[in-house]
Image 1 (tube, rainbow, N blue to C red):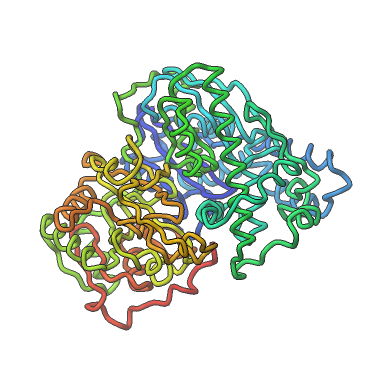
Image 2 (cartoon, rainbow, N blue to C red; image 1 turned 90 degrees about the horizontal axis):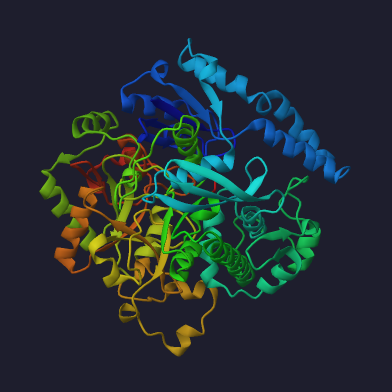
Length: 610
């Protein structure tokens, strides 16, 4: 049975193809259109998935959309009625869009599918509920036969937080918290208030939080959110405007925190750092109370996480260390893109009752390398057409050369194998650097990524070496867990350095791998496995042999505001539009100084701010 899952029309549209219960392909539309968080129908992602499987749309047994638009419309109407006459301006703006497009989504989906195949039969189209899609994306690919599944996001149809119990091929939704009470929207409110873009900049809040102090946390608990011992919560809607207004927060929120929202691109102050530290502290409290209560209630050893909040790897790391659950697995495409995969899997296992097989100790995500790949011949033709100058190296020679470049302090664009599914670059479409460098974090942020200097970078580490470098005795293949750098590797801070505040902390090396050690000694760890990514594992091994360090900086291959690169041409454009010094596409090796100066691009202003 072949099932195609689709998520679209909100943000991060994606397609995923499941054949006989196995995940064959999955990709976000933004990677093909080059529009960050592209919400449009994922035509190119669908075409890629079909191409990867060598089938046509006519051969697909079912197409499943990741949520139910009528239920979402019901929530919208009931919300406006509950708050009326407040919010009429917002209602007036939203209704034409819903009546023209979203309410009649079934017809729109049929039209888009018919554009791909004129004879597509309407009866093949089905819909899954939003949180069921998320839960399915987390449980079915997990390495567990049974698990508690916790989904936390902004909002689906009604649910904002939900719990499901998975066993074998079954998945039962058992409880939920409904809109407007949302942990995701609480976090997004502070994203907006501190001057970042909602549904895009939430990870910046997490990265900025360690520079601040949680001095507003008690204010948040007292006025904004009522937290119960089991982790359930209610927001005080007097302070928020997202139900009926055009912004996330209101004047009462401004008054509580001493002023209006920060304007995007204004200088960050200690106030914003303290605000982010405070909301992160509250989020972690809620998540830990939820997971402890669920472990106690259901007495299952395994926990799966999905939904946008599951991308908060700091909270995830604390859940793991807390130990309420023995085992933790997080869907790498935890946001709405992963809903496409979950919708397909839910239909296969729940609607059709198909059995599920679990490989001992392994998940079914294939390392999340589920996107397009390009062999050397194809890549060479594409690069030649783009005007690139390169040489082809033998695989072993390529690995040795890149290890030498990294040891020499160069930034390397690394385009290998299949593209990653989800928001993290995992060694398929990455920019790499030397983790031992004291200047690499700042250099990559300001000269390569063109983004805020405070943003941390993740370490990629050989799986077999992870406990030598980090306080993590386990696996983190998807860069979704934060762990502290081992104490013996940390640098002792002087009294003067300890007294620094805010961004002043950035320039103080924290450990023997300073480029990946955040200001609180933490790191967002990616463990690299030979089985799922042999080329990246070989590079880390070669770098370790050369330097004694099996850790590299790994950040996504893109500049600020641009989606992660997909094709060799995308990689070459980013290479020529940034200060990356070396590009490797498969076994094709490119050096910046050998490229035509006429091909250099200015990427600083090429994309919208993220």
